[in-house]
Image (cartoon, rainbow, N blue to C red; front, side, top):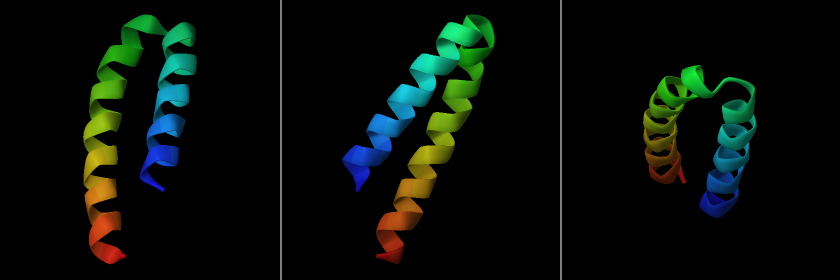
Length: 46
């Protein structure tokens, strides 16, 4: 499950980075922090 999730994040990041490189850096940092806490909650839930 986690590997699929990480792959999805990588694809999203790559696509978004091509669309808007400057904004992507900040958004990705926030999104990554969000994703890590989501994964932690997900792991605790299962």
